[in-house]
Length: 317
Image (cartoon, rainbow, N blue to C red; front, side, top):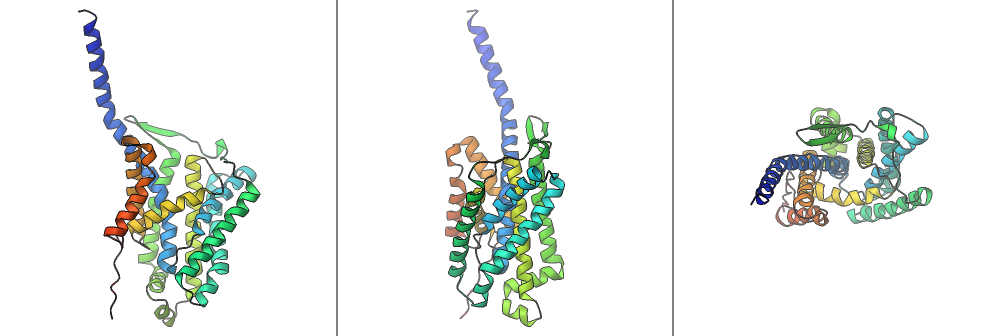
């Protein structure tokens, strides 16, 4: 009789500890989901901006993501630059790469008024070439940032842990969304960009320099893609040339769910996908995590093709 009581007591203590840990586990999962969702939103912002203005799906965008991370790695390891200096330089370099590739690949197609499929195929071929060149030069080995580039500290409260790099990712996503919304809604440049996206011919008749606006959008998109590559590479500390290819699948799901060309939709959809993926991995099965984005993509195309924030276009006879 005496041996049975301690067992029951220990079981009660275990159940009590487990019950107390459940809220902490849920809070940690929510934090992890917000971080994951912010990474998706960061990647999708430039992608949706590019599509919203140019009206084409530029598959080279994934390369800008990889290029940003690789350039940051070179700047920090090769040139020994601090992150605060490397990040803006990498953003500028990624933006310039985007402008060059857009000028070479897509400008001739725009002048010839080629169909959208032509742009898709050209950028697909260019992406395969760029990834192959990067792999031939750098190999496929995973590279890591130097330990000194970021403090790597973490904050913990109530059993919930978040690192400095994760805080940086969430804060950067929010700041970039606010800056893009201000640019698009509160400036004359944003008005010109929206006019060009709505009706290119009418915008040019109103005196808008379409070529300059397109180059600016290409630069901004490339800079956003490169910045996302740096921050996500910093968070996971695993960099290799094909890292942008996997993110493209998430990017498609996010921009379609949020609404093609909608900046707010990219943020909300990115956070939603991240939270659902984390919940699936934590409470269902980690092997099903990557299926969440695909499932949301299919359901969106079935029931709301315009996305959460998109508006269906009405065709008139």
